[in-house]
Amino acid sequence: MKLWGGRFRKEENKLMEEFNKSFDYDKVLYKKDIEGSIAHVYMQVKCNLLTKEEGLSITNGLIDLHQDIDNKKLLLEGSYEDIHSFIEINLIKRIGEVGKKLHTARSRNDQVATDMRLFAKESTIEIIDLIKNFKTTLKEVAYKNCVIMPGYTHLQRAQVVTFKHHLMAYYSMFDRDEKRLANALEILDECPLGCGALAGTTHNINREHPKEKLGFSRVVENYIDGVSDRDYLLELMSDFSIIMMHLSRLSEELILWSSQEFKFIEMDDLYTTGSSIMPQKKNPDGAELIRGKTGRVYGNLFGLFTVMKGLPLAYNKDMQEDKEGFFDSVNTIQMCVSIMERMIATLKVNEENMKKAINNGFLNATEVADYLVKEGVTFRDAHEIVGNIVIFCEDNNKAIEDLELDELFKFSDVFKKDIYDFIDYENILNKGSKKNLL
Ligand code: ARG
Image 1 (cartoon, rainbow, N blue to C red):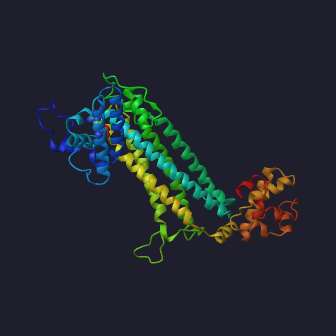
Image 2: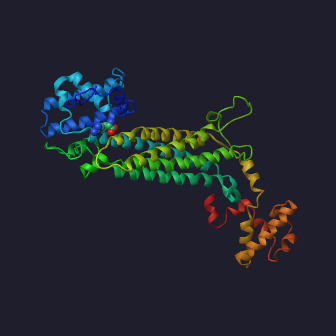
Image 3: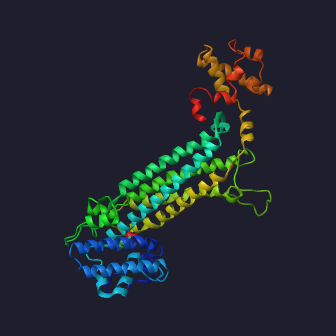
């Protein structure tokens, strides 16, 4: 069933018909397609393209269709080319001739552009809400666990930090993600209805009407751009990719921290799975899947970049390929943020093991150097002195704080008894800008 055919002498080849179809995946746009059509009819009546009665009959027909699809009285199936054909053909079937007036002053090109923007707006708002909720959880868990732990650079123990500060690093990342999405929403907030196929229409339409009805802030400036712009999908998918990169880094840490080698955290049974052969295993599959799914979100972004790169203006059918990847990315992001939020909310921090890990690795070496500087040694000399102390400790299997004062004295005569307090891990965090870690 098609919306076109008048100029064709032959039936479309079956394989071609299958190939051309997008209905299997663009059916998820049905709400947005109907919303866009109702706004279009509103404009048609206001601009005298339809009588009030005609407008009412089409609008009611569209509302009925919406309800019947929601209630599964009308199934989104059959051999339709796309969701637009499905809606229009079923409308005409139900309300008769007047339904054929719906498409006056509109093209599927501005129609699909409107549907996609509406869908993108709605799903982005949902994602922003999920991120907000995730940020709240991150903060709660962070503030509940102001526990000291080793901080790493190069995955080597570096300096003492707190689990709170570490987790709040992710809070900052997701805070930026939220802002990026809000910014993308602001940019995409334009209504393409009225652009027509690419060049507007000879009818006296008013683009402000559908813009207002659909809740867009502006109408698109240029018709050709309006039907062929997919930047907003690329921008959102770029933002999604950054979110996935953040989630993937956090996943990697959860996987490491829950390993027997680290044992810093325990992940809840709810979000871990077992092995079919090794009875002892508790695998962090949730985190691994998030790390793995990052690949498809990057892939969808690059898929669309590649679709768009050589397209002449304006609409080309290539652009139908924008949908599956975008829908998949939206679903993936929504799932991943939700699962990560639950994993963080339910994890248990192993305070003892985090503390134990601090005792190995000379995490107070920088503070020993700071002490020497405080006593008048230059930082470069202090660095060298502490380096030598570390070698000595390594050879003797000791921590710096285990050394006696006379042992320390061999390296520098400015050491005094107060060195031990100065380099005590808990005390370190009460000094200078480190107070922010608490
Ligand atoms: N299914 C099409 C798409 O997603 C709708 C627009 C069709 N426009 C056209 N000129 N054939 O892009």
